Amino acid sequence: MTAPVAERAKEKLSSDPAPVAGASKAEKLVKPKANRPKLNSRLYTLGSVLVVVVLAGLWQLVGIIDTREVRPGQPFFPGWQIVLTDTVTGLADYWRGGLGVESVSAGGERTYIGGLLAIVSHGWDTMMRIIAGLLIGAVIGSLVALVVSGSVWGRRLFAMPTAFLRTFPLLGLIPMFQLWFGTAFAGAVTFIAVAVGVIFFTGVVNAVANVDAIYVQNAKTLGARPIRTYVTVVLPSILPEMRSTIQLSLAMAWTAAIASEFVGAQSGLGYIVTHARYFGFVDRMFLIGIVVVIMASLTYYLVSRVTKRLVVWMPDAQG
Amino acid sequence: MTAVTENHKTTEQVENSGPVHGAELVATNVNKVYSRAGQKFHAVEDVSVTIKPGEFVCIVGPSGCGKSTMMNMATGLLEPTDGELALDGEPIRGPSPDRGLVFQKDSVFPWMKVIDNVTYGLKCRGVPKEERMSIARKFLAEVNLTHVEKSWPKELSGGMLKRVAIATAFSNAPKLLLMDEPFASVDYVTRLQLQKTVLDLWAEHRLTVMFVTHDVDEALTLADRIIVMTNGRVVDDRRVAAERPRRLEALSTPTMLEHKASMLQHLGLPTEGGA
Ligand SMILES: Nc1ncnc2c1ncn2[C@@H]1O[C@H](COP(=O)(O)OP(=O)(O)OP(=O)(O)O)[C@@H](O)[C@H]1O
Ligand SMILES: [Mg+2]
Image (cartoon, rainbow over all chains, first blue to last red; front, top):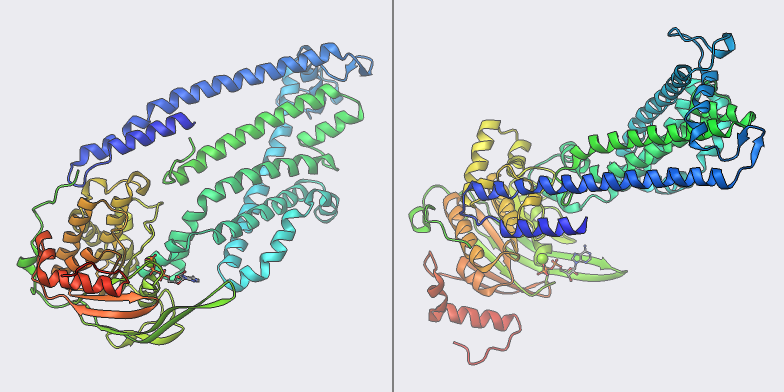
């Protein structure tokens, strides 16, 4: 990205409008940016696709070289010829019936449709837990943080517990949460919310501490009262840092969701993985892993796109 | 790259017109002690000055002599360790829109477009939208920034940002305007133009201005009165009676050269020959 940035900087310099010059120059300054990054991003996309293809090829290669099996017919490293066929139909085991497709346990056949429905329905369950957990955790974590960092005493009192919470191995507490809130929806959501809430809390507290004092002072000398200062100065200036907090919490939400489904859950992608493990279905675990990667990447992409709008004002906004 | 526009009202036309809007600033035995790395540091020492309503005062002094500290105390952002500052007899406690500050560092909010920055103070005070837009546009025009009204601050140069800050401060119609080295990062020609802009605005609105600068010539161009500070103390306080507008030639009259020589002496510079 260095070359285009340098070039853009040049454009800026040369079209820096003289104070008296008319409006046209200032507008030119914005326009030429549009095309070049597009071409670049296409190149990057192509590159990423290539990397994915190479990785997939490597996986196949490992499967060819190492032919050991967990049990007869179940290779340690199942190639794509298995993962994209038998594995998909095998996942039909986890479809609970409906939509005209009978479940396997009720006598239905293992079909691609059944497999896909299983992936979608369990993926949906996981997704709902993540969304609920993320929202609850983000809102509560941020609100508590804003209240705490709004006062000097709050900041002092919470400095230590905050640092402590950040390093706390929350994942180890999954069983406790399940005892408290059950293994179904509520347990998983609460757990995700707590994990995400901790990240948001520490993220917001830190971001608020990093707000440049000059902006707060400027607002005050212009006549802004504390609440307006908080809303119009502190909140926008923590947004860039909050973007990375959101990404971080998203990663945490996925980890927390899958992990909580490993223990005791009756649905969700993590549940399939645990179940597959009992029977040594490496291929199923592998395929679910890929589904998780794709879904997580999609959520990353969506969140990063949506939040990018909040920081268009940032100098050298990352494209 | 910059041309001085001719469409400003000239200083002569508006000087002494209209009521004085500015307030009187009185500093009484003001002290500021910082503790730096466990050690006490006397940044401002026993400063007492009275600045009259509508006066244009420049503060000159070497780096670190306490100019910004003085300004921040006058704004109310910083409390004196000892002594008191008052505006029109009212003790200064905390910031107020009556006392505007153009900061030494960049203070323009990067997350607001230029126009929203300029209207910010007006919005805080509940000025209706139409009115605040027209006020802001007027001052943006005064600093020649009409064409970037809708731009993000990141799209402006350092000097342009300074002008946004100036327009913002003026829009808020303070009774005392504090300017802390506002033109330090501005090229020479733009600086001359901005000096004219500030003088025009000052003459028109008749507010009290305290203007910090390193530049003795700038002080002589702008001020009714120049206060020289070194090591936290006022070491010189003089009136500059020269007529306005002061063009470049005005700086080389015998009186001005005398002012300059004796100020430089106060600043610790040995003057060769003198005037
Ligand atoms: N927050 C602070 N804590 C400790 N010392 C400070 C603080 N702010 C300023 N000082 C010290 O006080 C002295 C005066 O600082 P001040 O910023 O007022 O100088 P200045 O005259 O504005 O200088 P310049 O022309 O470089 O802007 C300096 O020696 C500085 O190091
Ligand atoms: Mg300073």
